[in-house]
Image (cartoon, rainbow, N blue to C red; front, top):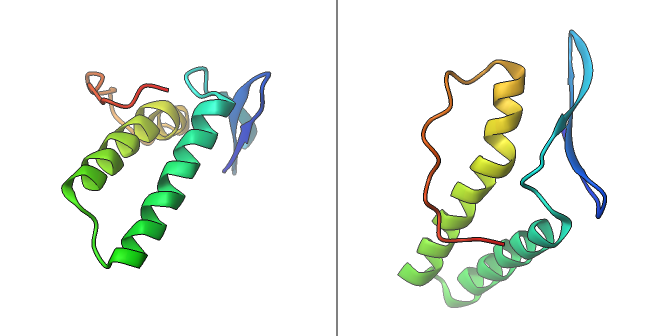
Length: 96
């Protein structure tokens, strides 16, 4: 799978034995993807430097992971037929 992020649209490109497909990711945007990548990079660097991750960072990571699931992972897995019926939307605190 490849995630295409641009200012025009965002898609996951999947390749299976059935062929290739573009899975639209309408909730993903380039600024949100860049912000999430920067957050994960900075949090990882801070954890390495300090030797631990505090509760604020853990809460931020959990919130970003929930956003990543809702925005990218669940739509792709649903398209591939890997998930059952989608669970109720989460109430993550991160909102790009």
